[in-house]
Every structure is written in structure tokens, then in C-alpha cells.
Amino acid sequence: MSDMRRKSGMRTTLYIAVLAIMVYVLVYMPTPYIITQPGSAEAVKPMVQVKNGDEKEEGEFLMTTVSASYANLSLLFLSVFNDHAEIGKKAERLQGKSKDEYSAEQVFYMSDSQSSAMEAAYEQAGIAYSIVPEHIFVFGLSKDPAPQGDIQAGDKILSVNGVPTPDHTVLSKELQDKEVGDTIEMQLNRNGETITREVTLVPIKDTNTGKTRAGLGVMIGTIQKVKPEDPAHQIEFKDTRVGGPSAGLMFTLEIYNQLTPGDLTKGHIIAGTGTITKEGIVGPIGGVVHKIVAADRKNAEIFFVPRDNYEDAKKKADSIKTEMKLVPVDTVEDALEYIDTLSEK
Image 1 (cartoon, rainbow, N blue to C red):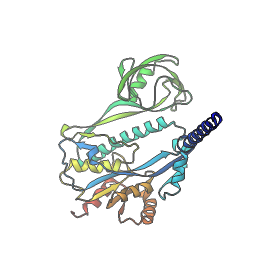
Image 2 (cartoon, rainbow, N blue to C red):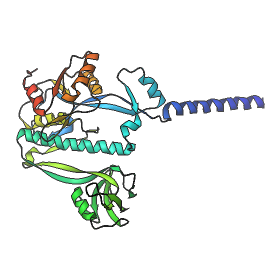
Image 3 (cartoon, rainbow, N blue to C red):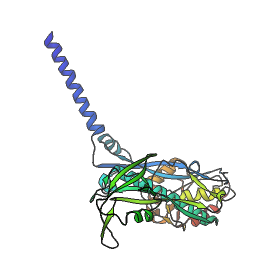
Image 4 (cartoon, rainbow, N blue to C red):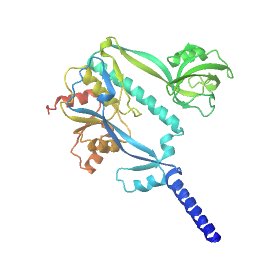
């Protein structure tokens, strides 16, 4: 009887061990692959607020996204049965960056896209504005040399040795007389919390002069605020929950719609994608085939696509037999001119 209980207990332990191994292999074991597929098509209006703007909007401007997942074996298996899923190498997407660095880079690109969209909309509406630097954003860490101290991708650099650093020019000035090996005190904002850290400067080769200077060993960009001369036209972005620069065009259209009287959508559901410059030039993006599917699923009637992405977008649109109208654009003015031809719904 004792032997039977012992054998039964061994079998139960073995079953649990095998099950645990299977769960690990299927769910938790990392693979070198990433799966991209259609993401969301979300209304831009809840993300943008123009002070004293015209908020009437019977239709919608939709920004489109791509869903990217670091693949386990289960996801890889399921993706075989998904016509809209693509399997790619994780290394090709990250390009030597860590996941945290890649995420921080996408946050920076989104912020830069929002600033460009504000500028483009102000330019289109003839509203005077200025650029005010706010803080420095860390979106990457050097590998050789690595930073010496607790500084992370996603940190905002607020000050160095008590001196506020709203942009890289101020930071460079504070570091220009320092030597490699010197320690500085930095005030950082990390995940909304202000912290103080000591960082030892490392040797950095200046790409312009070829000389070595003391630096932090990080990749940085300046986060700026676009400020209208008339505060009545101030724009604020709410939680966008996505990263990257590809929502620039749709942000611009929504901002311009609120800055000017009337409803640009005319009751239509208008999706799209594309980067934007302050001059209103629309640039190509990645993952357009997935964005076409996302927009179609939300019953978009029109999709603005950068001209360089049009052929790929058209092939995908034809393959899913969407009734959505694809409109290639080079500039925000192209999109506005097309909207002008639409009738009210």
C-alpha cells in the first residue's frame, strides 16, 4: 500500500513537472522572433485639445497602429493561421537596442511627431507660434563606452549640478569644461518621480571634430513645447498610449479641424497614416499593410496614405476587398484639398 502511494505520488510529481515544462516552452521561453499584425484604429479627437477650439465633429479622424508582439511558441503557431500576421527577426527590429531603449525611442518619436503636427497645423492656419525647449529625453545608452551611473533610457534630464538643462546646448555648455572621470550630480525625472543621481563622465568621440570629450554615454533628444503667441490657441495632447512618428498627418488634421471653424470630417470616418514636418510634408511609414486592415475593421471610408506607401497599401486593400477609398498624399494640403471635395453626410 505504501509502495502504491509512493508510485502514485511520483507519477503526480512527474505529470506536474512535464506540465510545467510544457507551459514554459509554449508561453515563457523566448524566441528570436517578433510578430506584427494589424493594431488599432483610434479616434484622434480624445487625444487632442485645442483651447477655445471648435470641437464639433460629426465624423472621425482615425490614427492607425501596428501590433508588435515578442513571440513565444504558442504565438508563432497561431500566426500560421493568421493571414494578416508577419513573422520577423527581433534583432532586425531592435537593431542592437534593448527593449527599454526601443520603447523609449518610440516615445521620443511620438513626442516629436506631436510637436511637428502642431507646427504644421499652426502654419496651415496662419497662427504665429514659437518653440520652447522643455527638457532632455534619454532614448538610448551607448555600448562603448557605457554610461557610468544610474541613468536609464526614458529618463528626463532636468538639471546638471543644479543648473536647469532644457536642451542639449545648455547641457553641452555645462559639460564643456569637465574631464573624463569627473562626477556630476544630475536631477532626473524617471516614471514621473524626480530623483538625484551621481554620474561619472566617460570619453566620447565628437563626430564633428574627431576629438574626445567628456560626456554621459547616452543618446538624447530635446522635448519641446510649441507655444502660440495667442494663448487661446494652445494645444494639449492627452494620453496617446502609442509610440512612433506615424500619426503625424492625422494629428495635424485633427488640430487644424479644431483651430478652424466648421467640421472638416463632414460626417465621414477618415483614417490615415504618415509622418509630418512643420512644412506639412507627409513622409512614408512602416507597416502600412497592417494599418489598412485596422482601418477597414473600423469601417473607415477614406484612408490617407503617403505616396511612397501607396502601392503596398493598394495591394493589401485589393486583397481584403475593402470598399475604403485610398488617397495618396504628399502634403497635408493634398489631404485638405481632397476633404474639400467631400459632401456632407
